[in-house]
Length: 354
Image 1: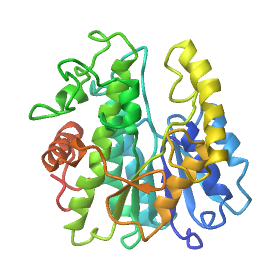
Image 2: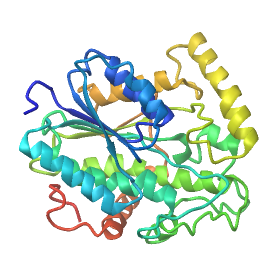
Image 3: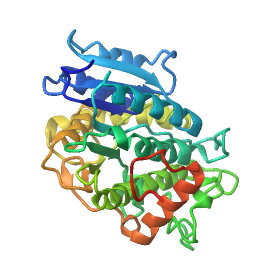
């Protein structure tokens, strides 16, 4: 029985650049070492070198495990969520104090689809798998201090100044704005929106990543709205954090061209990140180190004074994109998520799940 730990912290994408930094922050922070941690990777049998390195900071008393989960496979998500729920119900691990939805996937040179249901890989990995995992795990979240933390991105906001500089949403006819123009999100989910065939530049994948992150960011408000009206789950809090831009030559940027991967992400961005954090250690500038962003994510996650549905850019409380504040679109994305996952009665404790 896991009675000596205060709760469980779950982190997806634990082998990524930000994910491994979050792991290092957790296992080296005395206030977080009292929790049991589940670090989720796509395949625990792989090398997972960044995660392995981060775990070297763990002292002997730290309780953690590494779990495999392919977020693009709904069947896999169901199996893992059911297993975690069963263990918490049996008391072998404590209730979930924090569920950190950090895993991210972006394609630049290719476009692929999940084999299981044919969803665009960016949509399935960044959003849909996270949505299903969350609604299924709600039965195991601490009813008093439980927190769902969503790691956002400035790419969800076409009006963000950096997004404007990069220009993925610029088009004479506003072809890529808004994200949702119809009565469902099928074009985004099925990858027929911003295809590589219609735009062979790297922007096609950047837009699909932004659209998936847009769906994820709307979940902050829509999940919270449904939790607020739930007789049992109403004290659970959702929060979002934009971690800023971080270098990742062999991480999230590994699918881009050689120059961007090795020069921009491998040399220029790391130098800029460390210089900016040295000059302005508390700045919310666009370039940040993974250590700084990991701290920001976990501070927002564990601070019980943070308001429900708050969204932070680093440490600054900000608003999400204008389109992400459209209640009708929150509801549409949620409704379509139920349809895509074929969620059934009994798979979630959330009363108003349909």
